[in-house]
Image 1 (cartoon, rainbow, N blue to C red):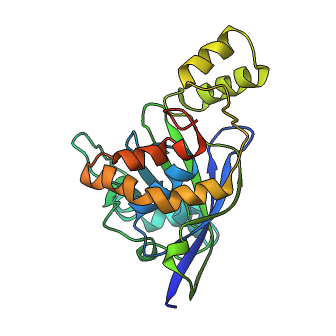
Image 2: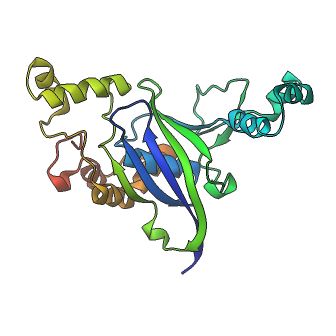
Image 3: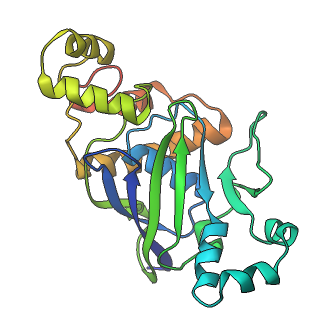
Length: 254
């Protein structure tokens, strides 16, 4: 069995309470785009919107410099223009026609760069943004990276977590919180309206099914890649898996 770099990440849906989080492993040969597809599947994102990763290089660099130098020394060492050129934040994204980069950013094409080309240092942090209208964000931190014998068929793999994930087009974190309150109440017009919109009365936002997530990671990573990188629609067979027909779920997989 060959050796591979295995990354162990902690990922958490930003700003939502109670926390929805995952601890998982993924191999270093995976691209940043493939890391995105894995996270989408872990957090119930249905490959319906644009996504990217943002790495705050400037913040990390400043934190490291401040551990050794004063603010005055840092400001004397680099002019503003030199700092802007040297410490650009990184966006990992699949380019699209209307994509925009700020002056303090540089672009890395997400399906052209592998995890192991970027960092193997525990503490590495980045954020995945999904659906720029609903503004979902998942915070990631690298917990460990080690080279070991492993079957790539077993990766990515979720180790533990809590919470269901997002609900597409619900209106971001505030909409998910409103939905959670209505479902917890279990009755009333708002709850009935949500049931009608969801097409189900059985959604449990506190549920976490590790086995089902890992099953979907094995079945659907390639489907997500085909959607984003090759603009291919899923086959009817794969749509059935996406919608959890194997569990008797509705048309939205809930």
